[in-house]
Image: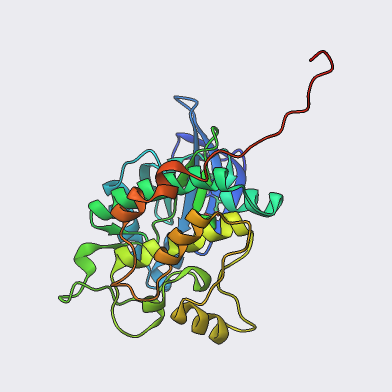
Length: 284
Ligand code: ATP
């Protein structure tokens, strides 16, 4: 068991547990030479081999090395001992964006606008390098000390080389509530288009405080996703609603592109000015 105070590879002192993922734990740590704060994701080699994940881990390393962007959690280095693999990453002091949404119920359109711009900028950058995240959800969106969003966890991402000859991805992955209809279906799908869909679901959740597609069971939720059956609540601005219906179009060939999202009024200008009525001061 890894524990606080332990020195890893003679260079990092482990601190508190930040979180647990499906494939390992993430600890806060300090680089003993530079005093820099980092986050270290630790995986048991044995477990990785046992569940046949070594290919996925290799892919995660390759992918994380390929991407360097201000809105993507940076991988500093990968180290391995006989029994463990350590991913040394940029430390995200602000934690998960999801926690922030849960705490406040929902975000204002203005706050969601900033995060959405940062998310789209990261996704656009990845797509231009042939990298598709495929598991975009609020839990994978972390905040730095300045409350800026960064995308993490490329564990399930696929490089464009893994596309079959028809140019479509074939592995069904992603988190149920955030996956595009074509990912649920048996045919292949375009990684770029399905990431765009997930960005739409994320944007909806940030401003609504709940998921756009819900059902009493998974089948019911999938049926709604397949039909693109969702409704924006009344407090969404008209411009935001228009954009969301274009993003969550169940037909991937009609779904809006990243370029068009960036050109949309809501993306460029946000929700607009909200009038705040000032109380007249006593001396006025
Ligand atoms: P999966 O289970 O699909 O691997 P995950 O996002 O649940 O994905 P991890 O990537 O292992 O799992 O991360 C687990 C948790 O650790 C995150 O949800 C987050 O709270 C925390 N965490 C991960 N990376 C960092 C980081 N760089 N800085 C701060 N906290 C982090």
